[in-house]
Structure formats: structure tokens, C-alpha cells
Image (tube, rainbow over all chains, first blue to last red; front, top):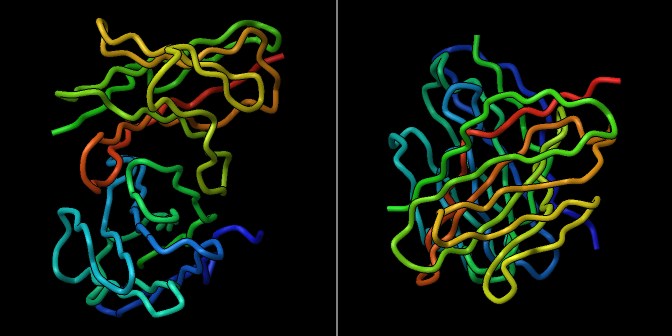
Amino acid sequence: KAGVTQTPRYLIKTRGQQVTLSCSPISGHRSVSWYQQTPGQGLQFLFEYFSETQRNKGNFPGRFSGRQFSNSRSEMNVSTLELGDSALYLCASTLDQLNQETQYFGPGTRLLVL
Amino acid sequence: AQSVTQPDIHITVSEGASLELRCNYSYGATPYLFWYVQSPGQGLQLLLKYFSGDTLVQGIKGFEAEFKRSQSSFNLRKPSVHWSDAAEYFCAVGSYSGNTPLVFGKGTRLSVIA
């Protein structure tokens, strides 16, 4: 089975722009979670989607949003980028139960905001 | 709310030496516990997990971890470290009930010297 894939792998944007990141989960997995990883804050949970519905949400501003499609692929969008949004964005998928199963992580998208 | 503390930000060990990475968690009930490893530029890979049963858990790459409820700890061990083990290690805790996201520690960076 193919693993979790994320595109693009690297991205450079300027302040004020918006960005969309994509995540394709492992085939058959219905839950997709997004995390932001920075050296100072570590791994912080952004949100989780299951069957096209947001099931959990972390403590991030409304500039961060996401969605999930019927094939379980997910996108996250960050509008009005700030320098502090520079981070590694990780996507993880599970079959169903978020915290009772192994989360499989993708390689991440590294976003640099200038 | 759950929380995870990894007291050591950075550890350096010699190749062939034993390793112990510390993890303390805070959670009111029986937790689900995980150790993940992240190599540079990569996503997170699951090393091992504890859900219930035997408190000594075996994982991949020769790692093991022991759940000690009385100490709220889930330390990761390896008897003989290889240079390829140099990476960042994350401990995470999940809740037994409901679909809530994992909470990760800030990570411990492992360096291996010859």
C-alpha cells in the first residue's frame, strides 16, 4: 500500500499570500489530521477530518482551514500568511478511530514565508 | 487535559552504548502511549505503542518502552545504539475515550557519536 503523500514538499510564499497544501491518505483510511511543526512549539494539532466533516479542531486562528473530499483526500489552506506560519506541515491518516489507532504520517510540506 | 513532557531536549550517546529517552505524561485515566521517530526531512514513523496489557512493549528497530503507571512514565530504551538511530524522538499520549487528537511532547534530539 502506498503511504501518505503530501504535495508540494516545499513552498516559498510571501507575507499576505495564501497557500493550499494537499494530503492523500493511505487507501481505505478515512481520517486525516493536520499538524504544524515548528522548532519552538513542536507538533501542534490543527484539525482532523473524517468522512468530509471536521471532527476535531486545534487552537489556531481562522486563517487556517481545511476540507476533505469524498475520496478522503484533504487540503488545508492558510490565508494572509504571516512570517510565523513558516513550518513543516504534517498530515497523518488513520482508518477510523483517531486516538486508538496508529497515525501514519506523510513526509510533510515545508512552508517558508518571506 | 493530556500533556507530555520530554525532559531532555538533546542527548548524545556513543555508538554501541545503551539509550533511554524519558517521557512523562499527564492524563486522568488509562492513556494510549506512542513513541515516534523523525529523521531529518521526513515525517514521523511509529516505533511502538501501548494500549493495554503487558507494560513492556517491543517496537521496531530494537526499541522497547516500559509503561509505569505509578510514575506516569513511558521511557524508551535501546540496548545498543547505531549511528542510524540519530533522529528526533517524540512521545505522544492519546485518550482512551472519544476521538481526541494525540498530544505530543516537544521531542528529544538524539545524536550518535563514533
